Picture 1: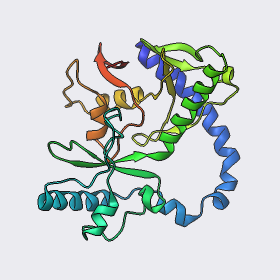
Picture 2: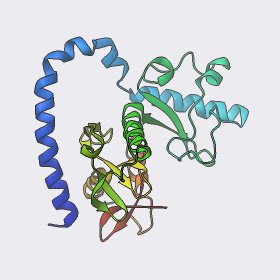
Picture 3: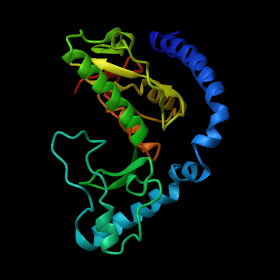
Length: 249
């Protein structure tokens, strides 16, 4: 068994025990906390992505422009080009933003990827995004108050587990939109917080034997190509000895 596989197994055991305990506590409350209409609203229907994709394609064909919100050069690629539903509605390409969209009270930003070639509509999970932002704020405050970098064991070269106890915090439960399993946050030597999608990527590689991956490929693209979603706050991954490894670009 490889080091990566052992790490997956150990983490899975720890996470399973935590999830079972939390589930038993929360289960009786779910009927009150999450009304049926809200649960339905926050499920991103595939037809919504298809409908927005169709509207984007037609808008671009007619106007040679994309209905996106401008962003700075430093915005990461999987956060960069949010769809401007106001533009789509004002020109009658859509009657309203989908229920799953943030603009309609949903839990997803609708984004455009590959804007210069063949624009694709994808979803960014706002819940996961906010949880990583929360951890980032904890780290920032901890450092400002004179604390040392809250890191534990190295998960990849230059990326570490987060020492939540040193910040008097509990690790958030970050649900993967790709696999449904619980992921963990990572921290680098600069104090930047990321979501670790290594397990999701490894499972996808193992599942799809036909996938051809070169040594320097950005493995995050495997997740994007296989779903309607983008990875949230993910580091760059490349293949090292047959396994995905987080690296700095």
